[in-house]
Structures are given as C-alpha cells and as structure tokens.
Image 1 (tube, rainbow, N blue to C red):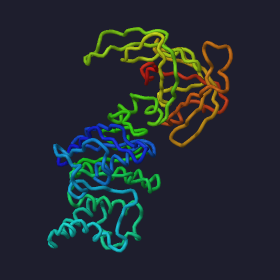
Image 2: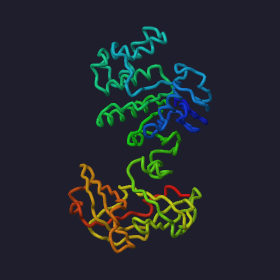
Image 3: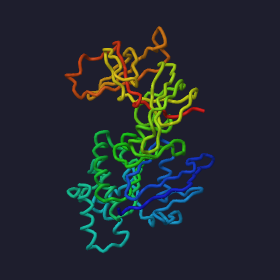
Image 4: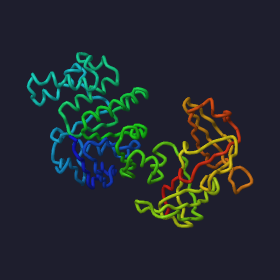
Length: 389
C-alpha cells in the first residue's frame, strides 16, 4: 500500500461556545476507504478540515504514519482535498486545471504532459483535455477535480461530500468510478458523506458520527447488522425499533470459538406482545432494552403458516399502506397484539416490511391495502441495540 495510516487522538474543537468535536479517536488504516458518516452539523466536515490542515483542533493530535502533521501547513501534509463544489479554475482548460499543481511545484515541462494525460486517462477524460469547465457535466467536473487532487501523488485523499451536487443516477455512477480509482491507486481515502447508501456501498470501514461524537466504527456489515445505538440503527437504512422488557433469558449451548455465549431472550414489547431474539449480550430479566428488526428481514404473507421452529416470531396485522417502487414494495402494517383482544390502538407504531420482487410472477396473490396479513421473522434476524439504564 502507498497510502498513510491516519491516527486521530483526543481531538476536540469548539467554535465559540459551540462544541463541534468531542474527544475524537480514530485509527484509519493505510490504503483504506474510510467514511465519516452522519447528519448535517455532526462535525464530520470539521474533522476532515482538521486532517487537511484547514482548521486547528483545540486539543489533540493528528498523525500520518508516525509523524505529527498539526504543525504542518496543508501543502506539506501529503494530502489533497476534493470539495463538493469542484473548485476548478473556470478560465483554464481541463488540461491546465490538472496540470496546475505540477506547475506550482515547478515540475519540468517535459514531464508535465505525460503525467497530465496519465491522470486524465485514469478519470476517463483524455478526450476532453481542451474543454473549459463550463463545457463539462457535473460528473465530468468532479472527475477533473479528482485528477487534479491525485496528480501530486498524495498519500491521503480527503473527499468532502464530493457527489452531493450530482443527480441520483450520476451520483451512483460516480461512486462506482471513485471506488475503481481507489482500487487502482491504493492510497488512503477519507470520505465525508451524509448519505448512508454511499458509505455502505464503497467503504472498507465507517465511523458514524452525531453531535460531535463517534458513535460506532465498523465495516458496512457490522454497522448495518449490529448497530451499537438507537441513533445508528435509525440512521443506517430503515428499521423497526421498539423498547421492550426482558421477561426470560435462556442460555443456548456452549460458547463458540470466539468465546461468545448465545442467549435466547423473550421481550415484552407493548405494541407487539412477546418477541424472541438471540443475542450474545448478557441480558437480565427485568431490563429494558431497545430491539430492532430490519424491514427486509420480515416475511409477509396473506396465509397463516404455523412456525417451522420455536425461534420464529409470528404476528397478525392489517396493511395500512403499500408503497410500490418497481423492484420492491414497502408495506406499513398495523399489528394485532397477540395478548390483546383488539387491534393495537391507532397511536401505536406500524411495522415496516420490504418485499423484494425477485420472482414477481410466482409470488402468489398481490398484497393490497387493508389486507389481513401475517408477519414472521427469526429470532436471529432481530437485534438488541441498547440496554436502557
């Protein structure tokens, strides 16, 4: 790998009385595609600007490999930044925009042309070298900005919401191209975004941020399947999130090879009734926990099938709203509490269910508004997010 490890230790930053970053600690690995993900105002761009050298933290350390870079100006840090507004020179051609960093660094003229063309080929713009920025599409402008940021061969590329100005289809296309560029050059990418789909698609690891704190660091799979807080569960994709009280806890078998013991926990959730969930956390009877199950983990059917196993949760409800979107349908289902004689009151939470249309013609009768339906999911497909104090 030709990138750098980026180590952030105990970094805090305030603007006046407003605390933007609270004691941030991150170890970003050499050659990694690492995303800082969170809502607007969470501190992710401020953290990126500190790494780049455009802001100075109140306290803390930023290191590239084993070197403290805080005393260095941005141009000495072996990093470059790609901004969401492109920051191209409008009076220069594509070629001259990309060549600009080389000219600033007084690279000999005979070396500039082959290197510029090399990086224009990397971003597939060699046929547009003599155009001005106003003759390019948004995606092409962003590729020029990426080529210009890469041509000095930084060890770290910082990307501040670089695709946010593009439309949805172009954004998805550019995301794939960005991932391919990362694979080709192998340096460290630190990518700031508020779009969880972007982060899940391309990242090796993600740091989820909110209100100046890092809430969870993990792979896209870990972040999505095992959220560490209610905020992460709700922010990453869609989910059904409920509070419940543990009414029974049963140990399942021996510890696995990692030393983890699995438990079957039965929760009493007021809006649903009794729900089974497996966990490796030591939950105690009487504890209040938050429970989540993703919409795509739930099976929806108009026919009641008896549970095949003891760990299957089965509930009856009525379709309150079906939303068709081509490749899938999302259902909002009002559930009947198994312990009650009447449907759940109208102020209760609806359960969201996503049904993929993988074999549409073979899926049986369409499920429509007001249909009576059955929802089921395995205990292993639910997840206990937090233990409440």
